[in-house]
Length: 284
Ligand SMILES: [Zn+2]
Ligand SMILES: [Zn+2]
Image 1 (cartoon, rainbow, N blue to C red):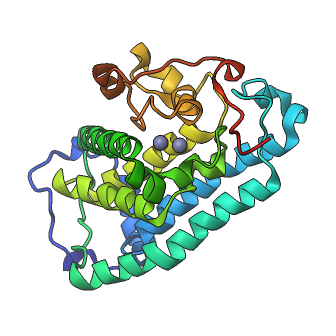
Image 2 (image 1 turned 180 degrees about the vertical axis):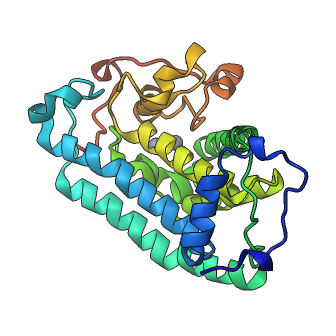
C-alpha cells in the first residue's frame, strides 16, 4: 500500500466541502496506487475506453436489423461494416499502440517522469472547467490540423487519407489512423491538461470522455441520447456531423464542437447518402 506521507499536498487551502471527489481519489490512491501511478495507465485507460465503447456498436453492426432498437438509428443503412473491416481497424489500433505509443511512453518516462500523484482530489469545478478547457483547446488544434491535412494533397495522402478508407464510419474505425495522426492526437491529449495544470483525475476523466466523443463521431448511429443531442444549441457535432465528414470530406473538420466549422464556413448538415456518395465507395 502507498504511504501518503511521502507526497506533499498539492492543493493547499481548499475547503473540505469542495472536495466531493476526495473519497473516490482516496480509493484510487490507497487501493490502486501502483496501477494509477504507472506511466502506462493513461494509455491503458485510453485504449480500454476505445475498446469498451466500440464493442457494443460492433455487435449492433453485426446483428443489423436483429438489433432494431439501435439499428433503426443507423445513418447509412445500406452500408454495414464486415467482420474483416472491423478486424483491420482494431488490428491497426493495436499495432500502432504496440509499435509507436508504448515505446513513446517509455521514452517519455525516462526523459520527463511524471510527478507523484497529489493526495488531494480536485474540486468538481476544477474537474469540469479544466476538462472543458482542455477539450476546447484540443478541438481547436485538431480542427486546424485536420483542415490543413485535407487542403494539402501530400499531407492528406501520407498522413490522413488512411482514416478515409471508409465512407461510412463504424466504431472501430475511430482509430483507423496513421501512426503520425495517432501520435499527434496523443501528444496534444497529453500536453493540453499539463498546460492547464489539470489534476490527474481531471485528465483521466477527460481521456474517457474525449474517447467517447471520438467513438460517438464514428459509430454511424444518430442515437437520441448521446451528448451531441443532450448539449443544447448544436454546440457539439456528434455522429451525424462526422459521418457527413466521411461522406463529404471538405466539411466538418472539428472533432467535437461545431463553432469552428460555422466560423470558417465548413459546416455541413446531413444529406441522404444517395445524394452525396459517388461510385468511389470502398465498402459495399
Ligand atoms: Zn473520422
Ligand atoms: Zn478527415
